[in-house]
Image (tube, rainbow, N blue to C red; front, side, top):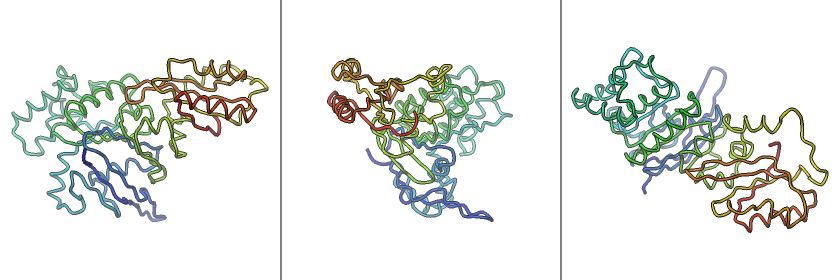
Length: 353
């Protein structure tokens, strides 16, 4: 597949009275046509600035952005407005017209584009069926739930038949169940309509659920990019490890950590050495063998299971554990070798978990 978005050496600086802030620092990024691509980072990392540069709502300080083979900097205003018609966008805050009903909200971009009113109405009704809100045509935004509002916003973004859909923290204001339904809708749109989707989020759980590829942004710089499954199994950058191993995603581990903590601390056996911790990820073909139990029996040494969970990564369930290993260095190395021989991804873990 060819790249539908190409970003080269993208820099964006903001100048205030007191300082110059470098929001983006030489970003290089390629997004394939038909992909679901995640851009993830903590608050203030620069990801929302980056997505606004993808359609020139924010003009870069330097560097190039190419969409469908056209360099945005070279386009005249009229050409840029036309190109933006092929780039839909949805936001955390929905941005609906509160004084207009659902069908009018969806028709709005078509009316702006000068479409025939009857054809715009037909298109809007078709999209309402796509987002499962056909019965809400006459309702107003105030009468809708958060998930329904986002479905209307998605239908509106699709009204002009865009080839790209930018989703800027589109699920951050939603509860987990509603988030899951919106992500399922986006997956359906990608599969059935062939729309390339770019998901901007601070939630690793969202990236794991829907994205094929991901770019991790930290302090305005691109620190890691690749297939979601590969980065989940082998995170290399500190930012990726924070998001994946340490569980810094706000939606991750909270309930589990409370359950583990209980009302007191757990005293570890003397033969366990907390300075050596590893994270293992179970692949599909390794999930049927009791690997940890067999390893303990083989070496005759206990390990401490500090964390265990199952994650959905691109529609595939992957188990992960963080283990505290015995204090003997030779035993540690033999255990790691044993796990790798059974096709488990093994990563060293530093810091608290």
